[in-house]
Amino acid sequence: MIWFKNLKVRSKLLLAFVLVILLAAGAGVFILTKMIEIDDEYSSVMEITSHRIEHIFAAKDQISKVRIILHETVYPENTRDDLDRLSAELEKGLDSLHRELSDLHDIAAPAVQERVSTILPQIETYRKDAKEAIGFLLAVDVISFDNPAYRDAMLQSEQKAVNMGVLYADDMAYAIDSLSGMAINVLNGPLTRREQKQTGINISQLDYSRSSHWYLSAYPSTSPASSASH
Image 1 (cartoon, rainbow, N blue to C red):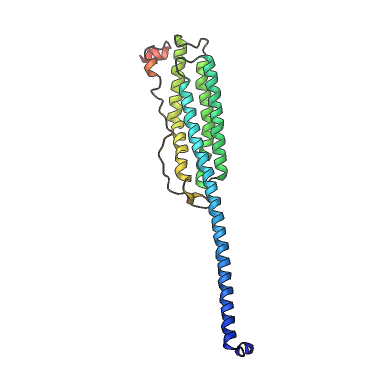
Image 2: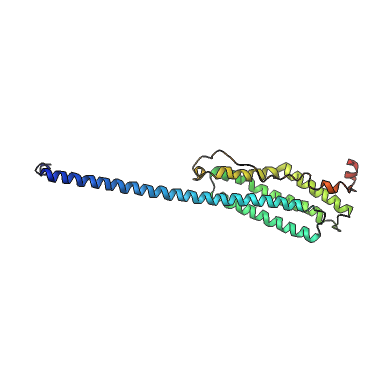
């Protein structure tokens, strides 16, 4: 340190000033680097969150459409072509619903992944039961509301849809609707973050329990079971 002592005061001040500048520059570079990293991470989280929201709202839209389609299959004006068309639309809707939730599962937080994992099997159960409900209608030779056998099939199909709702379909729709409250918060973004408090209003549940009684009640069923109930 003798060389430093031998320096003139002016040189010492200049050297100190240079050191301060270097330290300030180093701190600035460090802070700037960290800010860039934070910005990149935030942008990544926001992008993932945006994709999650897109999948969730697409799934909510599909479950609503699917349940409406199943409801439309018991319209008295339907023909066989109408039933075939509705059946194909229902299958397409369920495929889209499954795809949206599967894509969501790949990028979701653990809590959302767990819930999606419970919904996916229910979609396939819904597919099987919906096909059975429509099958009651398609199995009748003459698809006409004037045909007592077709009215019986309509009652069977409607009751099947009501039972689906009571057993699992209403809960499935509610579970899909609740995903937005779990995933919309950015803090719920990274896969290692804790699930945030759920929020949101259920807009997917549909009640079809009284869907066709208004017109079926005017035409009593001819089946033994229905006659006994009357």
